[in-house]
Image 1 (cartoon, rainbow, N blue to C red):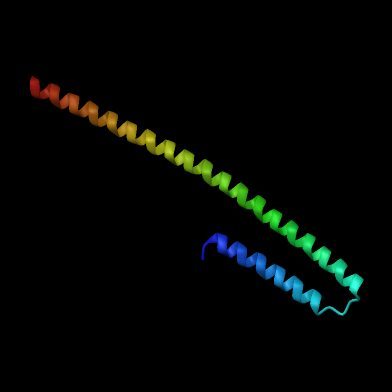
Image 2: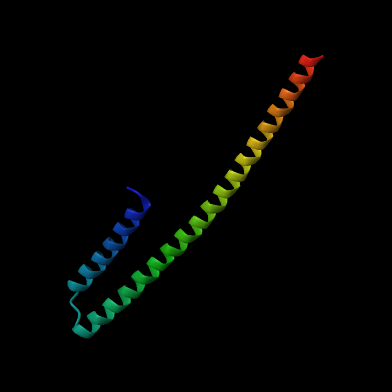
Length: 96
């Protein structure tokens, strides 16, 4: 299962658990509405935290990918330079 569907499943499970807990609670209507509002705020805060962590992770992965791409470009350039130098040396040796 990919991370996106895992996140969606987690959010749905949290919401369902909160709803079931409130529905079966023996509180009066006003207290239940307060509980619903509180649980909703808690769920919103958890979701915001997860989004923030995901955004941070994506930024880190983007940075690492940029670094890896830069290193790969440099390695390719170095290999091409070495190959070119070796070809020139071989051509020079063949002429002599």
